[in-house]
Length: 187
Image (cartoon, rainbow, N blue to C red; front, side, top):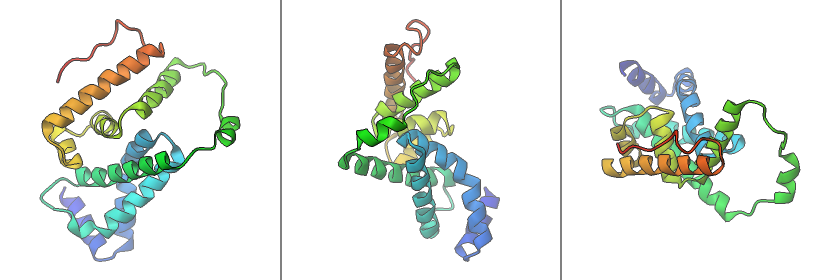
């Protein structure tokens, strides 16, 4: 944590190498969140870039007494929600998208399940998806997620539970998992 504070201080002094180091350090986790939320590599890359522009511009506003990652993921989540909202406002051109799709069956069950899981994540409400990804992929605690998303702890637990329930239901309907193997327990 102390080494992160030093890195941030170097960034605030305008040191380019420090800014690059900060981006490199967190680019992977931020991309993972954005990709899971947006389901599209190009949109995720755009959201990551916008996230780091905002982070570097607002670095002086980060409270050094709090964890950095929840603050960073809050900015990334906001960029993703903005991208999702603008995506809903613009029509997609299906005639352009369809020919680019690869319709070959995939031989590996794990890859098939991963693809189905990504489809399921795309069906979730954006706030459920963000909470779920922060908890399961980035391993943030419920408390950190509540701080990141500026929501009560109970709301975060409910959203993650509902996301699990909806994902299991989605995967069962698509026959990606067996009905009897999976059940959701209350947290």
